[in-house]
Image (cartoon, rainbow, N blue to C red):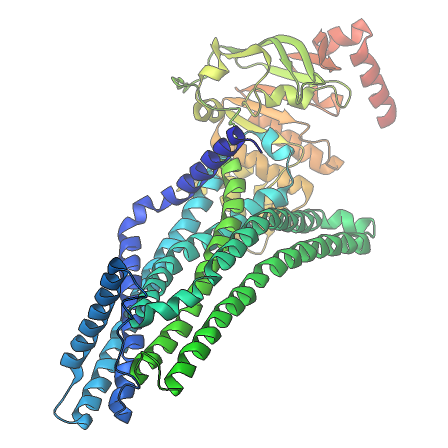
Length: 633
């Protein structure tokens, strides 16, 4: 990799770190309290370790094995001698400070003072541990909430094509799994970073103060350990990306199987779906194992490196003390050994920080890929509000494609005046649904423009544009809530009388009243507890309650039986009174009375007129009508 490629890569990483941790800015007070508490916890933990040596001297009344701690002046230069003597001075000052606090008239008094000091230190240490945990938990949960809120809000702003090109499990995984992984890295990066860093600095300082020469023996291990940590972190970032994608696959298979459970059972595909789910969990399992193998390799290897260094020091210093030639007294040696082994845990924890942060950054990249996704359909900078529809709708040479290779609509032009009923018919796949999806701006056309009351819909705010419209489609999806809340969706505080009035007009009040819990009946996931006709009538009641000025019906009765179709069609006819309606009809008999009918074939307008005019032309409409009439006979 060239130098020019390395620099942008580092800039990208720094930008990723900056964006990720910038979310902590509003939480600086809680983070400061947690960090200060962690610092005091670490300092008190260090104080406990330092007390080990003096406590040993008090209990056993032992003296130094060798009081001569001076260094041979021939071995060191003047600068080194100055540093060594400065370190000895610090050690003596710390010992004198402890002696002033705990030394009593007798050894018994000194022991009692030691015990009280230890109790107060442990009490303070645990108080700060609690404060750190509580305020860091506040920060963590705030981070999770913030990212999930931002992701969900972003999903609401993204256009439909974003979701059509991604599996539902992947979309969900960003909000669930990736946010948790990222939060863990922030947790470890801040929750442990302060505590472990201070502890390592304290214990390392103790080791240097007590015997800087012994400490030098352990230094050769550090480059090996940190090099290994860097290598592990780089590997884990790559494996973490794969693992999260495998988890998204598990979510996708699970979600699809549950949503399509009726089809699964109808085709006796339970075993097939089970095998597919087992395959996805097996792939996730393998990916997780690969990541775990690398992650868990770090701890034992770092532990072994630290232990080897500790054993070498024990052998070197212990042998000299036993032989009577050491420079440490028993208390110093005990403090040194305890500090050395106490340092192993925070060092191991610090080694995991880099690894966890790399996993979190992999999750952050996926999260920001969503947050940075282009919003293809959005309000113009100075979008206008439109509260009333009074003139008409015009499509002017509209062209549209879902991708660059195939055009779905080509040169579509037509007008519909306010109050008219305009029907669209044509073979399946001709572009009828896409044509009407452009009006509420579910998508934007690549060519031409659509006008509402003489204004380009791209200049109208999305909220006010869609506020003019009520949409009823063939696939009616309800929320897993009560019938009342589904009818009054988005209209908080709506009176029960208005809900019932809308239900009556939609021919839904009768079947709702017969349910055990009436309007408080839960409809189940996607409305599965209701029949197709019942769901459709609830959807029409929802549209009626909104009182839209423009209605869009996309084959609203095509999937219903004859009795349900009659009831739904009656409700639709009531809904269309004094409203501008655009209707896609599967059964042509239902749109014979439309003001005009437009025939769409292969993305083009091929015929336009009334039912009688189109029948007289003996074109595509006549053939479709006659074929359907023959089938119905």
